[in-house]
Image (cartoon, rainbow, N blue to C red; front, side, top):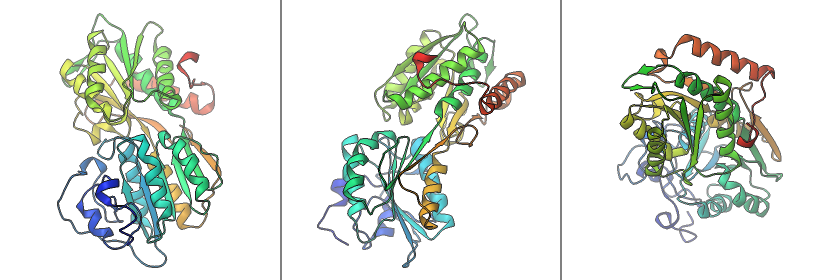
Length: 383
């Protein structure tokens, strides 16, 4: 292992001592908490500062495929975007002779460092570097040309380079469905768990993380779905500027609930945990994102539904292509409702209490979007 080139503690935020054991003496890449096909549990159970020792089984041999994972800021344990990506690589490791290592950047400025370290590594030689999140696009646009023989994939952005496979999603389509749910329920007297809608208000909210064209797609679809349910519903929108600040998410949501919002949908990564906290405190409802957050968080009592985004599918498919020697760089794939890349999933605790006529209207809208009868806007200004 080339220990002189960089130091683990200095450059990489690891995901636990177990990964360090699996990688000891074997890698020149970011020693950031590598994992194997036997990596157990979801990202929601990880602890980057853990010193516990666990047994890991590392795939090995000349035919082993090595993947380096560079996660989005906010890290593992978000119960959302990054954890969904981890699910994809875990599945690939279970099915193939594949080992993976993980890096959790604290800031956008670190993306280039991690991408480069994986690309430069020779022991192991990483067959694929997976870059999770649109904020990695600028760094990857610089890194990929410098390492033309290295395969990269990126989620949520398109990087035009012959060695990069890009995956994007139609987040606006899935967001339309949860928006319709919010719009329909706020116009009713609805109670579930310890929460209820306000009889004197038809008002819902949206909390975004870092403002940009991607998160605007969530917002645009959500607003369009709300308005499809009722033109009389008001929609409050705000951005916290971070995907890793639950306190900011809570503050934003509390303000919305106090201004009459019954339901708040977030597209804000770990910041969204604060939205759930606010919903519980105020006796209102929330909608999760990326994964079924009524499963991956402890807020089942307030989460009506989640807009799931199959980042795991993109990560898995890219890894599978590498294993099968069918990886196509310089291409882009977009996954929407028709491709089962996004969808609505009702909450495990509250979902059964949502009226069937509401679910029926949402199911009809879902099919109409797939059939092309409903076109969902990608920018709020077009709603």
